[in-house]
Amino acid sequence: MKFRIDIRRKDGLADPEGMTTHKALHNLGYTEVTAAHFGRTIYLEIEGTDAAAAAAEVETMCRQLLANPVIEDFEIGVVG
Amino acid sequence: MKFRIDIRRKDGLADPEGMTTHKALHNLGYTEVTAAHFGRTIYLEIEGTDAAAAAAEVETMCRQLLANPVIEDFEIGVVG
Image (spheres, rainbow over the protein chains, first blue to last red):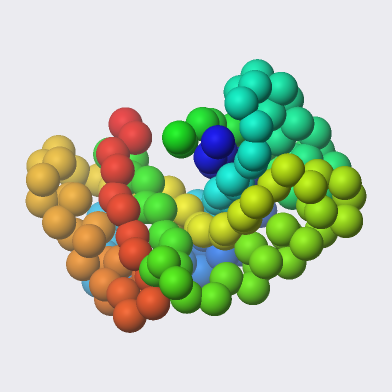
């Protein structure tokens, strides 16, 4: 099974990469861009057939290692 | 309009973050994970009403600044 985890900072927290990108786009003339935010995505392939158990395990992995739940939100999706 | 850009390394290229994550998950006991890959996501908010023109412009931004088309694939989606 393939899972996709989207991790991004919680709303309201500083996003320096996003701000820098926003400025760079403005400097290149893309002044219609009003905001830019960064996130990261992790794609996991997992052996097994029990999708619900695997999804629960992916959530545990996120809390334990992959994301920082204090400052980040994450969303888990199945891609195949 | 809100766009979401998914950027990941082309298949076959080394993905050190993914390999490190894979190893770390194994060390934590998640041995059923067979692969881990990293990508990044950029969320852009753009003023305007012409969705097709904005999407074309986002693609230009990707080629010019946001992604490295030599080693990365990107995918643009509208999120709102």
